[in-house]
Length: 87
Image (cartoon, rainbow, N blue to C red):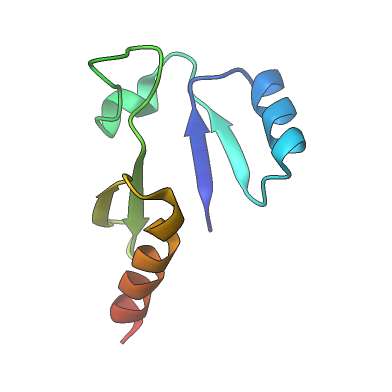
């Protein structure tokens, strides 16, 4: 399952998801509770989270954390790690 989380409201996330035809759910964290838990609040720009992804294993533990610097190549890196995890 893929989920996205932003600091935006439900209405803003819905409009964004519809505009860009997002294929996954966007969750809302306007109070930045989840951001604090996962250490993704950007200290250089507090209005925005860091672009970070988490691969969660079947036991619900975080297996790997990705600082996303290459959006185009990110999916391939995650898929390779998923394949390794399944092996």
